Image 1 (cartoon, rainbow, N blue to C red):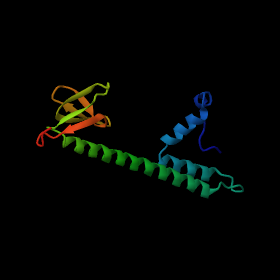
Image 2: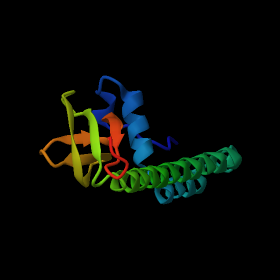
Image 3: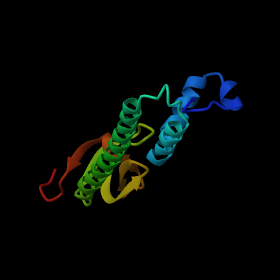
Image 4: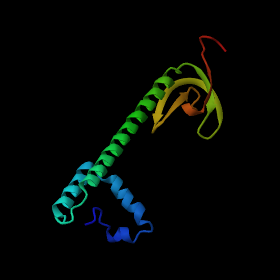
Length: 143
């Protein structure tokens, strides 16, 4: 008994393995457990499935889900750290490149998060992504 039936649309796709892999990635732990129990209920008692292999697959899925959750949390922490760092630049003069690679400078008046990118909004209307920042001048020190 196959754990992952291939539908007619999958069988006719140009890369059925990739399609199956995508469907597998979308499966939750609960769905996987249901499949395991269905396989165990329908197995031939004289040729049982290897339950250790099924549990190993379940552990793999849990590990993948845990890694994905950890990655998402780390991305959130990095973004929040960038936002906090950018906030300290408000009132300072900066120089950097816009997303179109124009070299601009101006005073930072605010900070914005667009998708996963933190950008500095300058008093002259330009927007400089934090990753494109080149020079920071603290007006209190002069420069």
